[in-house]
Length: 167
Image (tube, rainbow, N blue to C red):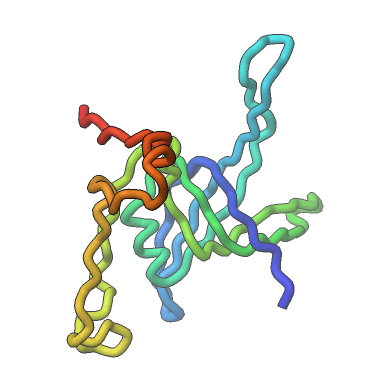
């Protein structure tokens, strides 16, 4: 099936609305996406046109969106674009909806603290790793690895990275 998949970066424009009908949880919110461009005459960044999308989330994504999103949050939304045209009171209106597959905070503009939901399978249940499989340790990116191979002249040409200072 042909679908238009988009990844949109913008800000949450309305507080998410949550519903839980018999078919499963659903949430929706408006997303504002404003283009920016460099204005040579003003020598400054200028806001361009703002597009608004209605973002729809279903099932666990809807529940997590309700618990995580607030008006003004910078987010990335990936999903299927659906453009609708309808006539109301003799006026034709066009709207763009995104059926979200993934929603996340834009870490280029702030920080976030991730928390797993309780919907994760427990060890020993279907879909969970088998109990006999050892957990893989996280790699330690701060500890230096083995010395690089090669003649000493090449090794000296590779500067060592100092650990980042914690402020």
